[in-house]
Image (tube, rainbow, N blue to C red; front, side, top):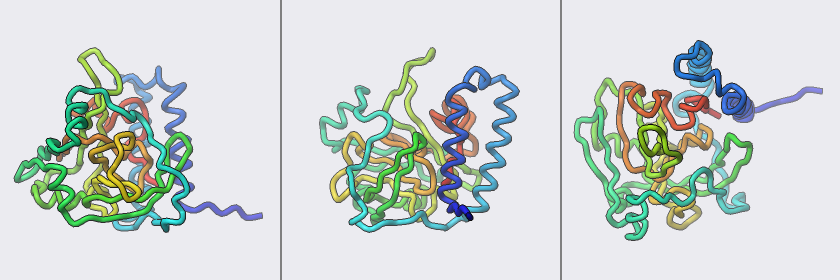
Length: 259
């Protein structure tokens, strides 16, 4: 008997297996000064390069028909941020929301929700794959991220797009720790990478990340930051969080979670 495994399922399974181990029994070994962290970082870099070769730069994630949306999109992570600044925005129906775009750009700017909605939109029906093992198919509508990058002008030395979010996940020694994530410019300019403000034909619900969340359709769900308040272009990730590129990556997850 021959067992066939498509690339998406293979890469998704590999990512889930690796991150499950890192999130659990390896935690004591993952201190910032641990040699184990260095070994795993090198392995992650190798995985990133291998997956980039397999995925290509413009290959599209599978898109589905509306008839294949059989259940509401399951929320993940924080579903109702209690941060004071976010509550104020939500109370005003996000009319005063501004998305700050800064860092290694020629023209730092801020965009209202209306500004983003007035940009040429893309709608796509895709599958959200969570590292916990579940998936949902939903329709997403939003502005392609590359449109915003083109407006602000990305400096040549920029390599990463970092998403800073409103939701606080825990309180650390230096204060509240808010969610953040990052992707490289290849994924940022991918045609399916959008700042989504709509889901299943309606405004994006708070539980799913209102007013906007990023959709990075070729990666696992934790890469798709919700409640985005700012985007920063950077040449490295060392100054964000603990330096690993995302809230969960700082706790052992892979930075590149391609599927």
